[in-house]
Length: 119
Image (tube, rainbow, N blue to C red; front, side, top):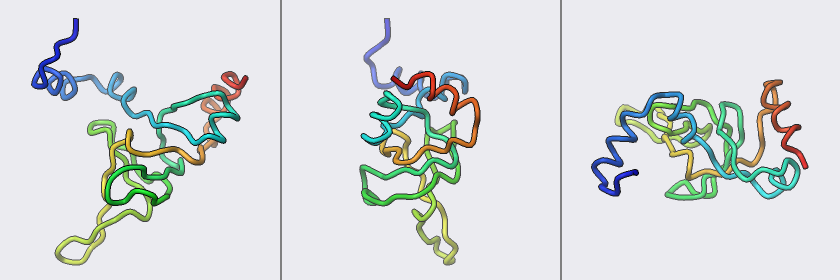
């Protein structure tokens, strides 16, 4: 039985092992990818092109530069802010707040898995 207490939910999230935390890095795929491969969600990877769906950067699109499995957030090319000294820094966006518009199929395992799921 999973607790409904927010404090226990947070604790569970913060203490999850990395192999389980990876499962939280899934994002919705666009309609054309969904119809092509027969999937609704897939794990976000470096190299995927995503569109931000929520927040101040919603509507912006870019390639994923870095994925942080510890926090569940993504650094996206072109979405930056300036520090006080003027240097640009990536804005980290949670994986659930983006939609994958183009998959990076350079990995043969990922390509093979998607081909298997194709209907």
